[in-house]
Amino acid sequence: MNTLFLMVDEMAWWAVGSASSLGAKTPHIDALAARGMVFDAAYTPSPICVPARAAIATGRYVHETGHWSSAEPYDGVLPSWGHRLREGGVEAVSIGKLHFRNEGDDTGFERQIQPLHVHEGKGWLLGLVRRPVPRYDATAGLAEELGAGWTGYTRYDLGVTEAACAWLAEPERKARPWAAFVSYLSPHYPLIAPEEFLSLYDPADYVRPAEEVPDHPILREIAGFFAHDRHFMDEARGLAHAAYRGLCSFVDAEVGKVLAALEASGQADDTLVIFTSDHGDMMGEKGFWTKSVMYEASTRVPLIMAGPGVMAGRRADPVSLIDIAPTLADVMGLGTNGFSGRSLLGSPDPDRVVLSEYHDGGCSVGMTMLRWQARNGMQWKYVHYAEGHWPQLFDLTADPGETDDLAKARPEILLFAEKRLAQIMDVEAVNARAHADQAQKVQLHGGRDAILGIPQWNFTKVGET
Image: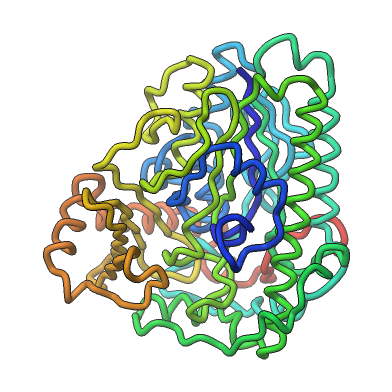
């Protein structure tokens, strides 16, 4: 069997049309969902690109990889699913965004086609400077770069599709099993969508007032650092939401082209297709834009699996994107040992808990989310903030909007969550280790003042915008 692993960037769970009434028009992803398994509670291992992608590649959580932040990218030292497949004789290639350190590292792929890696092989160095949290002034652009047009990101995505379709059409694909990781930049900001797709949405439908940041010291710290919201007027919020949905529709069309190329190649019946996003986007909810918090819009992502042996349906139990690596190995019969995740081809584990972690810019302490489904079907989320800050607890069944923090009202659930988390990791030790590693890297880059003196930027530029 072959595997086509499709990943987009920054698509929240609700943005898929078939997932929510608020979603975008995504007919190709919807069709994939209709014939496949939809994981309704899929979570990123970290709500920011670089740590998440290192964890997805290795099938291990962030505290296991040590790729903590946007300036600590994957370098191939820990084995990836690509290494496992390549050693088993499977052709493993990447087409598009990786956000690893550089193309010279052996990250498991036989070929990297049109790869995109972190800025200068270093990434976003400001993410290393966390205590005390510095000023971050490059936030106005999110509200200023809005509307219709083409950017370096959307042009890059057209090239990814072209390369993927050409690769699938090569006769060599039928010579041996293959796994292709096809990875897009959209719908990641800038929130500028091609007119064809922006015109599908009326910005007036999405005009809304600013939302208040929750009263929690760390959340207010993050909101103060990523101060995007103060640059938005209500009308701009409407245009931003329309453009975000336009970008989702744009990338859906690109995914549709790749799926059509797979069908045209005659290999669709022998290929497992996995679709997901590396993390979500808050889009102004609770006063936050982009990611970097543990709310559902940031951590919960679409995850669909379709193809041979996959029954159509839905699963409500929480799963993690670190489960994709063992799934890819399982498909090829290469074993799932060495991964912390579990194959998605297996049966649900009623006692499973999954994690998401954040040790990146704008937050002076480590954040760890624990997500589980109780035996009675209730969905729970616990968020631990290191160094003594009070936790959060949400009953997602009764409160999907995460507005009612039950940390004080449900001490028995809080105690259960604390015990389960302690069984998995020592969160305070992990927090200390992340800070120590980052302090060393700060010195390697010339110290705090040197990093703060680097011109700030809000996203990796690709081509001309």
